[in-house]
Image 1: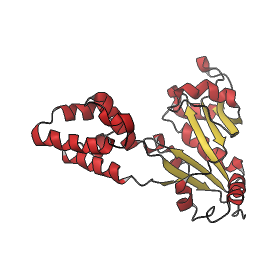
Image 2: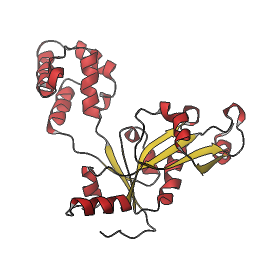
Image 3: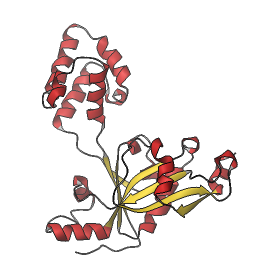
Image 4: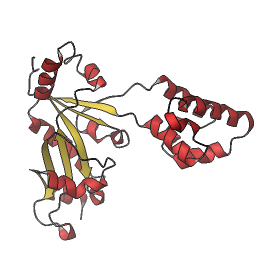
Length: 246
């Protein structure tokens, strides 16, 4: 079936957590969202072959996490400088969070994730919609839907190790592949091998029992997980709503 005809056959409808449950196992985060406020699904208006009327995609909105550092930067301190109760009340009135966006794997790559976000954000009826995520860095559907991204600052120790990897010809763009990085490390000898081992030991010294991990793929996978798992913050300001006051 042609991509455009698939898009036209899907309608955006209010959903519930049963729609989420049908697609949840396709998401990289397995824990169930809490404080859910709204669910919307993209569902075929009519049965779509063997696909039937199962949801092709789902988006889950939750209440905001009160402790998100980049929110202060993104909103110009809108929720800062208030007592805890006032800040929490204002936050709960003003913000909803995109907690999950999941598309059925057979229908990925045709813009459904972008459509889910773009068409449902105004339905939240709040001044601000936000999201935190790592995967959108690989697939920037949140930005395509109209959200603005704010990148987190990397801790100094992360920057130092990334620079050390670069010094032995492992560039930052390669840090998404533990096996490829491990293959490169296995080929290092002499001063280069000693150099990177020294930097890895320095990085791991504050990681509890992980500091004694032996060289190998498991250690490399752990290191890269720490270096690359820095969620970015995404925000959308509703152009139809004025700023909420305390």
